[in-house]
Image (cartoon, rainbow, N blue to C red; front, side, top):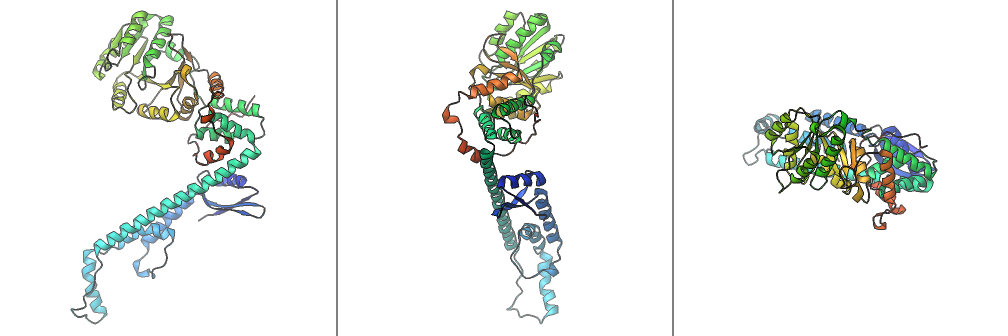
Length: 454
């Protein structure tokens, strides 16, 4: 195993060397304080995997004739024993051959001294017991690894707070704004050293804005046209947002070039709200209940410049979500799916919603209820992590006034302005940050880091 030794004046610097040379998933063998600093022994995760695989292969190919008396097993030998024990379990022919071979090599035994053949059920039971021990050991190793990494990360963040308090301020600001711990950690760690608090905040906002993909103008909808379906759980504001989009289009191109479809045939009067808006705009609303109806409606409206589809709202855990997505995906027409995200929802809820609706792919999203949200970091965090294009932001019930293009700079400013009013019960103290970071896994997706903060 290619174990490497790292030495630095502090645990933070030693851990940084480990990550630079061996990667973020390196296995920490040991960490101890020595004269002049901290010493860490570590190995690449790939090297550990290769060692285990090589040990398993060598043990499985070893001839039984060379077997030695039982000795305490190493980790590699125990991992290999899973395959070796199965290969050494005697078959029926081998069991029958044992007395004959013994008779040729030694004097014949009396009938009172039969040769005892190994019991197959006993061997299988032994194999199962050893497999259980191996699994238990691997679980303990993983637990130890996570514990060591957590402790090192906690020590690292404690040092960061002391040496670079501005990075700790950046982390705390992002958490207060509703951003996830993973994204907050990556932004704080990558922020340039030596910045003033003002410059660090500018760098943070510009980096977040750079990684948020937003529609630059309305030409993709109002000019290019096409078929757009607004999807999302119940109560997120799909029907009102559909009416806002319809009104904007009618004001620009006229009612005769717009088609409206609703799939909400389940709720009592579910389609009536959109039908009222359609009557005001002078646009007929087509109600459909299955894929056959949808195909007929799309065929009738194929000459329209733009078609908007208001879908039924159900819980993201309802099986009807899958049926609805399949209906949209099964149409011959290319339907762009825009997911409506409620800005008042928590990050876990938004992630749950996205996972339910992204099965066949998403073309973008619309943030709704901006005016009702106490924090909007969770919604922005999801868009950044999942690279969802933001089409519009809805901030009220007025049609069509309360619908705007997503201005990235405004959204970042608004997110951190709202966080200033965060209740102290939901805020993190500085002494809690190291423990929080120690139990936070790094962000999977890489961000585009902004080098300028002017």
